[in-house]
Image 1 (cartoon, rainbow, N blue to C red):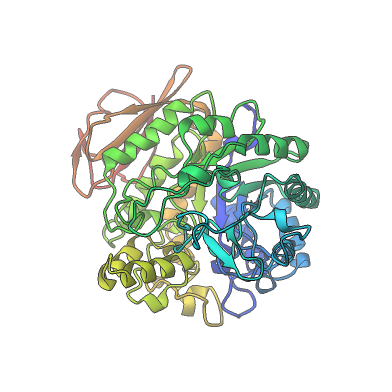
Image 2 (image 1 turned 90 degrees about the horizontal axis):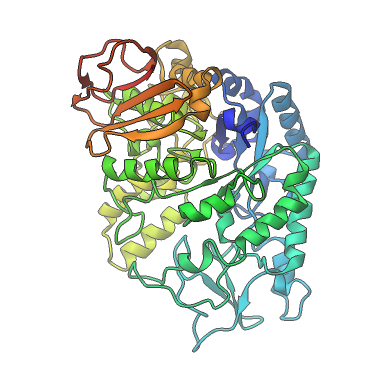
Amino acid sequence: MNKAWWKNSVIYQIYPRSFADSSGDGIGDINGITEHLDYIKELGADIIWLSPVYQSPNDDNGYDISDYQEIMEEFGTMEDFDRMLAAMHERGLKLVMDLVVNHTSDEHRWFMESKKSRDNDYRDYYIWKEGKDGREPNNWGACFGGSAWEYDRETDMYYLHCFSKKQPDLNWENEKVRREVFDMMTWWCDKGVDGFRMDVISMISKDSAYPDGEADNGLYGNMSPYVCNGPHVHEYLQEMNREVLSRYNLVTVGEASGVTIEEAKKYANLDDTELNMVFQFEHTDITGGKHGKWTTERMELKKLRAVLNKWQTELEGKAWNSLYWDNHDQPRAVSRFGNDAPLYRERSAKMLATCLHMMKGTPYIYQGEEIGMTNAYFKRIEDYRDIESLNAFRDYTEKGLIDEEEMIYCLQAVSRDNARTPMQWDDSRHAGFTAGTPWIRVNPNYPMINVKAALEDPDSVFYYYQKLIRMRKEYEIVVDGIFKGLLEEDENIYAYERTLDEKRMLVACNFSEHEAACSLFEQEGGEELISNYKFHKTGILQPYEARVVLY
């Protein structure tokens, strides 16, 4: 564990639909990624996590897979993929594939067979249940709105879909399903991929009683306690590890909805019997209210710090952390946790990066984060493309739970589409993303915020990220130092220290637009490793100031 190569690494996530379009059809593709690998190499990232590129009807932008061993036609061909993988390896970059095996598309061959009849050989590949009192088997609500059950008239039964109705859940209790998944994973490993990010992997084992959930949002019952971290999840992952993962030199991370500290210690244990690390969502769910994630509420630093510090300290010596602010499912970090107004955008983007990258764990950078891309703030529902956002707008407004204007404000704050607008390469038409019409609107601030401008400015957010990544390679304390939280009651400053042998690294970040008293750096000596301000004030952190000093 202590020598694992991925501990020193930084992972860069690419959302292929929105990264770079080489064909002019308005949709990002594999060749577009290959053309920009030198950019990622220049940034300093070591690993690329690629959101799904498999064949898919795109009900959920590729997370509904109809063939695990074919490439989505919009993205290119398997030959394009092989060239991209070779080009990554030539540059010393590793590739992590997105593994989506909690569910498939309803257009997958297995499901098309499964729904033909009750006695079809593939029937038990999915979760089919009888109705109850002329209704669904229970009251569970799907993550993307509506019931989690879809009625099939042909066989007079319901199938479970925790997400879209076009994403039926696989039945992991069926040994044949597990064998199919492991064989498919082996096929990709033999092709040369370097790891897997496992989509909602904590949901592959369900409570076999399928009880009703608490109806806490006024619409449906909460299924989370019965589908997350279920009774056999660790058993299945240990089997996966024995059959596939342990046979290759891979990095693995599990997206673990509803994961607790105790569960995380099992998923990402130091015995290396399951996964290397997990994504937890506690720090992104702090603002959830009576309508779930749909809120405009800003995050309180005290709550955010309490969650992140807990994960840092309680996993110490027991499991490894994933460090992230945003990804394809979260709004833009600088808009959510920082301040994206022109006066403070770059300063707060650098502050957030400092706070995260100096913690213990493997940092993840989501495309565009390294240039300080912001939320899109679309004002019309017609500009949104995300199935979750569109369904929520319909469900909550039609039932009168939130009015349309307020729901648009909620989407502007937390819609997944904020992360999915095209990568902003330059100030030309459509931000240099495509020669055609982009599948989703480009953020209108692209003339000011783009890669070309960032590379031309030595003080840009990009070069700040580059320096943070370089520090991970140069200072052992950044990777291995023990974490300890400081100033844990302060309402503006997030501070902590890392210690290794006789060394002590002090990190302090002002999360506010006001000056904040801070006496942490008053002691003599010390080497300033990085800061987003050239000049400091004694006893004070300036607005969104970040400092890292090694003693």
